[in-house]
Image (tube, rainbow, N blue to C red; front, side):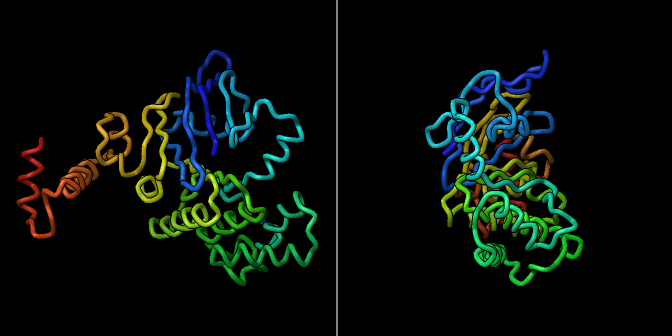
Length: 275
């Protein structure tokens, strides 16, 4: 579990984050969402220790990161897995070498054990037998899965994913979402996903922080979103008229006011009555 308490961060005279608090829960997919410039990236960099907040506290399982000495911070970072937006694979290295790179940096495992571990994580992300391929030889979705394999090869307690579905088609995005969710559940890790993808929000958003202009505007689950009356959140999630209508229909379904026997005309009448 990661707790963020009253985080404030400024650059010069420009305040980026203002009094942000929240709990990123273990065994759940915790999403940080918001428009561009809302502070998502800065908050994430504060959480992983790349930026030091001006005020506030960040606790990993009850231990304040800001109070840790250098050795403690190093140990903590070895427990953090990162999936970067562009996967950040080394083009000159094979899939296997990209994953082994992390083991070379942070473990004393023998070559045989490293090879075994690489095979295990590639099997986990359904890329068995892809060891000798180069990044240029695999698809965008496969690169993301290699990135996930590298992120989990050290059995991290915390997994951070930056725009994991960026540049992917909707079907492949669902595959990546499912993989992230399954890994989170199986290993009981604290997963933090920064995303603009509304499919991800509705698919895996166990716990969601919505930032607006540097502040926490809303917090809840993907189920709570359907019934949220927060105007800024609704404008962000359900931006188009089509999605607004889809939300209203879903609310009527949950309330038991419509089912599969209702005609389109019946549904339109109900929607008009609710306006």
